[in-house]
Length: 58
Image 1 (cartoon, rainbow, N blue to C red):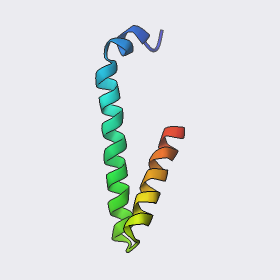
Image 2: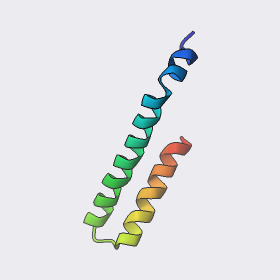
Image 3: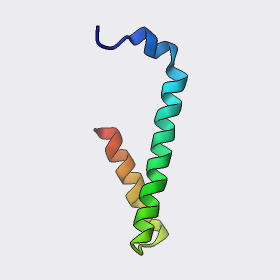
Image 4: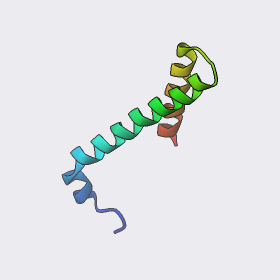
């Protein structure tokens, strides 16, 4: 079997923490980049959240 489901289930806390950390860091970095291009805080937040949501859809 390629994916050991029992192993993933046993380490669900580490897995969820890693996913949440990646989502938060990605949102923060994209917001900084958009803000660096001179857009408003509202636009930076909307773009960063939509980029993170797009990543979750893939």
